[in-house]
Image (cartoon, rainbow over all chains, first blue to last red; front, side):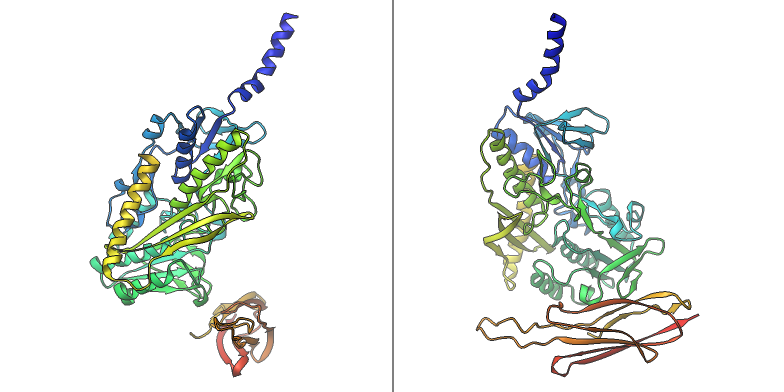
Length: 413
Length: 105
């Protein structure tokens, strides 16, 4: 009898312990979204058990990495650690998540523990959709860098620009939406043009674009005309700019209507949600994750929330700022859901600074709210004026730097 | 901007080849109104034709729902060396042509 009772108690225990500690949250991805979410959860309720799964010990930020490519900034200024999160009481697992079992609510890591959760937050950022660009893969990126995840790729593109002779051509291939940080390729084109103008003035930047329009287009085009004149040429979608394949053996970029063999080829491939989102079953046929925009809960898998670049956000751009605001809103929703309350409708804000040359910046700020399955922009947004004195551009460049210091201090400091 | 054409310069006899043609055009639907409430008159391309050594091999009628800068891609069999001729016709007497040569071996 005793034996049977003991066995029964053992069987019961897992579900009891689950009920008692209904506050175990695993966050996968230590970028701007996941980190902001983990910290907001811990701040809202210190009793919650928060685990952050992130294989990189050092985070390298994408915002301002175009300055690194242009030689205006060291990569060290982009690097952040997770010490402060650990000090907050967040458990950091420096492993990659390899498997997710939504039934058992368990995350398997590459070489570490299995983690069980009540709620899982996926903030995996982007992955490259190589199938959508024949000829391009990880090996090709060593020759034709994408530099679309900051780190070694950023430095490789920088090195290629430094090695290029004066009079060379730098091509930037830009994919169709949705992508991480939609205005960033144009900022990159601007800053590379700045580097070439200062150091290799006979060179050229060629933008091969799968889009006709892009954010803050008038501001960019005015800046290009004023600062770079004929150095920067853009071939838009309707001019045949869409890249259909690449040949890394000859450094050739093939568009719908022509071939280009630049000296430096910066190929930004089409994108989709970070790999683990697919493994979790949270991605749909678009390659991104449909969510309930009020709670960020996956529409496909229970108890999983998706934030940042990986989610299908509608009008809200895939940016550091948006990921951070989503992380905080998702944390608030989880706290309410765990307490048995319904989540409040989040009001999200996103801000985006573009620097086209030192002391020349402009910005775009937007407010977003859930509508149906996505976020839509609501009133209250602002963009820099198309015509403005150089003092305003200089002030916005300073504000951009201050924004970066603020968001990184908020996230990692 | 002139039209953009992509025809392979060389092909094997009997090979299936892709032909791409894009022309710059606003494709104004005729359904939009200005801020003052006036109807913006329709201005679209209505017809596209491709001839291969004089024989029509592809034709398309275009309508207001088609987006600006219409881009058509189609396939044909490379039969003989020669010329592809493209023609776009539209509202307000719009007419535009382009051509490309192919060598079939």
